Length: 113
Length: 115
Image (tube, rainbow over all chains, first blue to last red; front, side, top):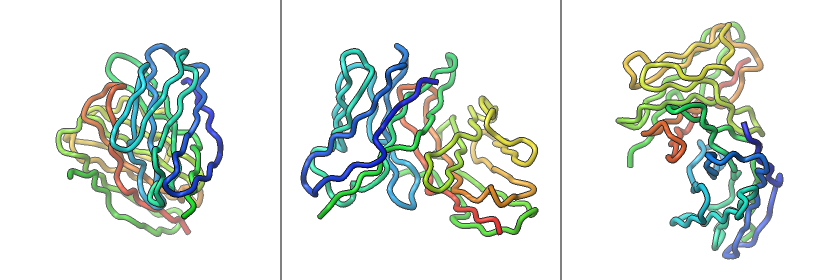
C-alpha cells in the first residue's frame, strides 16, 4: 500500500486558517486521497476526499498537487472544535470489489483561543 | 442522522476471559469494518466484511479473535482469551459502496481494558 507522511503536530490560533500537509510520493493513479479526523474519545469522522482536482465542502478544502505526490487539507477558520487528530489516507484498491482505509499516526492539531 | 451503533462503550475484563463487542452499521451499508486503535496510534484494520462475507482478515489474530456478520447486517467481534495487550479502542465502521470513491462512517467505539 502507498504510504503517507504527515507532521506529528500543528498549532493554530482560533479563526485563522490551518494548512495540513500530506506527502504521498508513491501514490498510484487510482488511489483517492481521503482525510478523516478524530476528536478526543470519538471515532474518526470523514472530512473530505479527492482524486485529482481540488475539492471543497462545508468542512474543508482539499488542494491536490498537479503530480499528486502531495496534498493539503485547508480549514478556513479554525475553531476550538477543530482540535483533533487529522489523518491523510490513500484508499487502496485491491480489486474490483473492495478497498480499505489504512490509517497512519496523523497530525495532532491544537487550536489556541 | 443515521449512526453506526456500538456496544458496550466501555468494557473491563480479566485476562484469559472472553469478551464480545457488537456493531450495528447504518441501514443498507453492505461494507463493515472492525478496527483496533491502541492509545496514541491510528486505527488498524482487523477485518472487513462485504455483506456476510469476509474480504480481508489478514491482520486479525485468528488464534484468539473471531468476527461474524451472519445475516449481513450487524456484526460481533470476539476475543477469547483476552490478553493484557488487547487493551485498546475497538472501532466499527460502515460504508454504502465498496469503492474508493465513498466515505466510511465510524461508531464511537468500545474501550476495552484487560486487567
